[in-house]
Image (tube, rainbow, N blue to C red; front, side):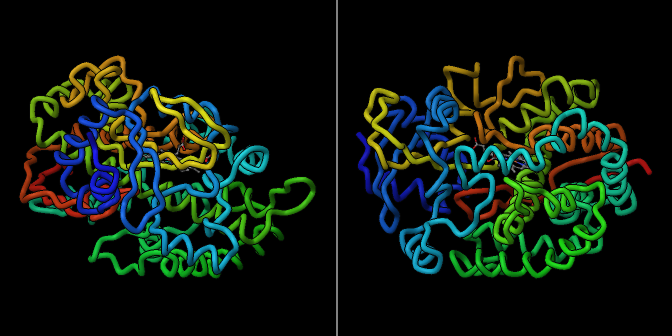
Length: 416
Ligand code: HEM
């Protein structure tokens, strides 16, 4: 039996996510004993912990019964109340991930065609050039590197900037703003957590994009920032808040998650040398199974929330209208009912219906892009590796929402 306060405190504590073994042991116990678990963590509004793949899928498949507004991810009660006092709502932005129904459909449609497999595939050559640039950087600096801060953080950021049509030299600035927006609880990021950090990041992004919006309205271009600037919903341009939320969402969602997966995959390969060898022998496994296994293994988004609109029986319990549910994606991705031997990392795992991108109306808009980026990067890197090993203990970010490696020292020699 789980104590709702004690277990809740563990689930919300960013320290929990620093110890993946402990996190997974707890979630495995929850999956086995009480797959839908009510928790009341101190300082937070209470919620259901949803731990099973099938239950999370069912929630994602019923978007009119489980809404993304007003609670989309974990904030403290104080932070939520501050946001409410400042904006009259419990969420500060109106991004695709934070709206529902028709509003969501229309907003998503604005950029959807840009993220379809066919469109994304046309970018393959340009994305490969960016990947090569980073592998070349490794080749030019043989020896110990911090794979997170030298490579993994930058590559997906540069790709999303390419799609948005932003100049590569703005990358360091954008990185600092997105880290701030993610409300990381880590003492090493220079972010002001909570409302202050989020609103401040929003303000900075608004100032950055304001002249860009003006220039693209005057001279539209073939990129996503221009598409958003010129989009009309019901004969009106998007509001400033809608546009800024969109840019912020694409920049943040578009890089942090993917960089965590690029880095987490590297760690998994180094910890499982026989899997690395197998992949080096046959890089075609990347597109066939390994990239999905990277995503399943890392699952950089630890949760999203939904709010029930009506009483709904789920996982043997009754969820009441108005109650919130935390969908624990890493738990879905270790569900014994779905995966054989879920705690082993296998680059040839088939089938692999990994759940890192969620499910349903809100399923990750950038999923094809993210998979392409992962495949291309490792296609470029793996054949050129002459020597590689871990060069220090990996360090994780302290965060309970989007999380991954903060530092990964590796000793690497790459063919030039
Ligand atoms: C490894 C990389 C990524 C992971 C693990 C990931 C994961 C997710 C998840 C779990 C969701 C929520 C799904 C749901 O609520 O059912 C989501 C939504 C979203 N993702 Fe990703 N994502 C990744 C990369 C990207 C990229 C590269 C982009 C760039 C365009 C992106 C853009 C979005 C957007 C816009 C949404 C909101 C979609 C909506 O609400 O309709 N993501 N992502």
